[in-house]
Length: 90
Image 1: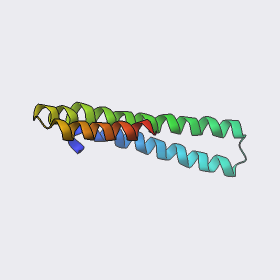
Image 2 (image 1 turned 60 degrees about the horizontal axis):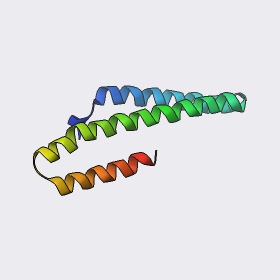
Image 3 (image 1 turned 90 degrees about the vertical axis):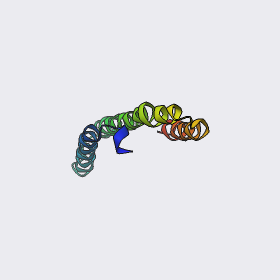
Image 4 (image 1 turned 30 degrees about the horizontal axis):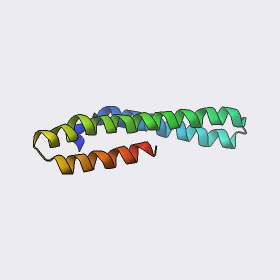
């Protein structure tokens, strides 16, 4: 699966998300106003969604395309349907 996504970009984004989560954790202990914490939570949610989007796009551009090119239609469509289902839960 590694070949279907830009792992360096994903790792960089994930490390940024981890930093944001650590900041939220500290904000809770520092008695920061709830609205400010929620802004950061929303930022993490958006960043996490973007990671999912990049993975999903990689799946389509590599795995689905390759499966269709090799004539493995049923398995490829099943894989795509499962990916759509999982991504839509985010």
